[in-house]
Image (cartoon, rainbow, N blue to C red; front, top):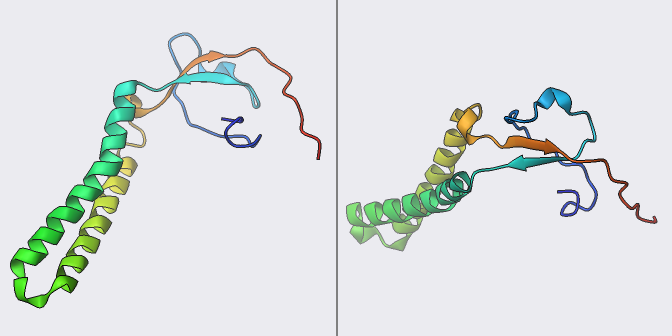
Length: 120
């Protein structure tokens, strides 16, 4: 993550793996973590598909309930659906924040390497 974030330290909460426990790690250790592919695919689908579907469904419902009021009602329904979709995703993430099956797992502590420093 340091390579991506231009040298800033990134923090990720992980659970202890089968070979390494979190107690064996110290501040500034470089570690390898594991995130199941299934989890990444399901999370991506949830974050991208749910808001889109709720936006389309509420736009269609608003248009069906009030067809004579014009596009403003449809746009308002779409905006409400999108907001509800994002709210659902946020509530789902909050509800499952301590679920052990949805957390990254600590795999190994990497050997210490001297990282090159940038000249200011």
